[in-house]
Length: 150
Image 1 (spheres, rainbow, N blue to C red):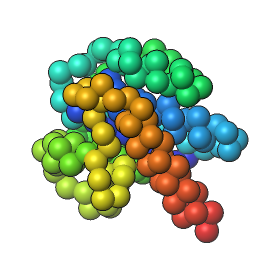
Image 2: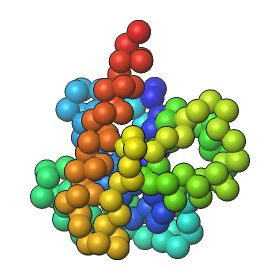
Image 3: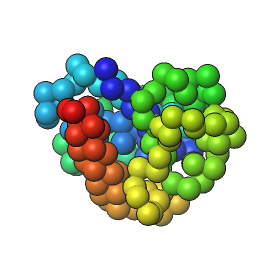
């Protein structure tokens, strides 16, 4: 089983959106039984909260199914549980280094190469965030499937 964790600051916008987008992409390929896909936060600010309503609306608009979500913080001891840990931006990358001190297996990556996923919390631009997340998910899923095919 391939295990993927998406991480953002609060786990109420970008990382749960990524989780549900990737689940849909995997399901569309008939591979849902081969993946475990979850999300988490680097902060404790939103623990227990559901996904932000604007994020839900964007997923509904794009016909991405989602379920009730409870924000949680990533724990240092779960590093070994995941094959891939994708952060939404450079701040998440920095914050995750405080939680997970080392990345000896090079599992932790930014979702997008060369840029941050737009943060809709500050801009209210959920379309740009969706497009960034979708692009990152498609790109990484293709990479993961190529590596695991060999």
